[in-house]
Structures are given as C-alpha cells and as structure tokens.
Length: 201
Image (cartoon, rainbow, N blue to C red):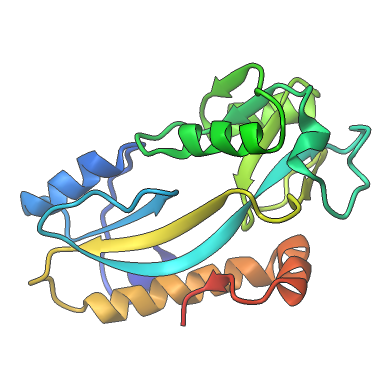
C-alpha cells in the first residue's frame, strides 16, 4: 500500500474471505485483490490471478520454548503442541491436517483467531503459530522453518481482465514481498538453502 500510495490515493478493504474479495472484483467494487492461497487455487470466475510469491509456512514459538533454538523442525517434532492460525475460507486447515497425518500424528487444538491473538498465544506458550515466512519480528518469539516445507502459501494478485495497470501493481507487490524477505534473516537464510521459492520473477 505504501508503494501504491506514493503514486496517488489508495483506499483499502480487508476480509478473511478471498471469495468475498473476488466477488467484489467481479462486481466492480474493487480494482485489485491481494490474497493468499494454499493447495487449491484462488477463487474461480472472471478474474485474472498473478502469482506474487510462493512461500513455505514456518512456525512461531515462544523464545523460551524447548525447541526455540532449532534451525529447522520436523512437523512431527511439534505433534504434542496446540496450534494457532488466522482464519480464512480456503483449504489451509485441510492441508495442515493432511500434512500432520503424513507426519504420523493428529493435531490437537487449533485456535483460529486474529494475528495479535495468535502472537500472544505463542508468546505465553499456549500455542505454536503457523505463519508466513515473511512474518515480521515479534518480541518474545522465534520463527523456525519446517523441514521439507510440508505447507506452502501463495500470494496472488487478482484483478478484472479489463483493469488498467495490472502489471504495474503486480510489480509493486513483488517488490514489497522481496523487501519483506530481506527483512527476515530466517527466511533469507532458508532461501539460500532452498532455491526456487519466494518472490515470483
């Protein structure tokens, strides 16, 4: 938003539902949508989607968590934990459950709540938070990659096929994502060892 606002006025609308936002594009109520998608694609319809980035999902742990010093964790290392994640209307919950099954366990409690509450639950040791690899630093937490990247998150930009300047907006979104990667030493280090992820060319 900061990059776009430098070129002119910008108004925003936030929703946990990518389907709602896609519908607003189709109705002409929004020009662009920046959304996340997991295993399934973004909502279908008369919308063009541009991939901004493909990132692994990492975990946030309290800095005094028994595993906080690990450079990488197997999902099964966290089998006995409670979990927290932000809400959405995609397939992420199902993808997470399937990844846990492949790792040999059934996940326990999953708290679905806003970002601030997720961060608090991790800080007090009440839950492990599933997060985007570009998640900004939060006091009292460490971010740790999951071995083998069992979960991924795609950042996509949606627009009506007739929308102007779509490629210009997409380039700003990619530049902002690349900036977020540079601000995350953990993710930057992971990308050195795992090329092919991150900001789309």
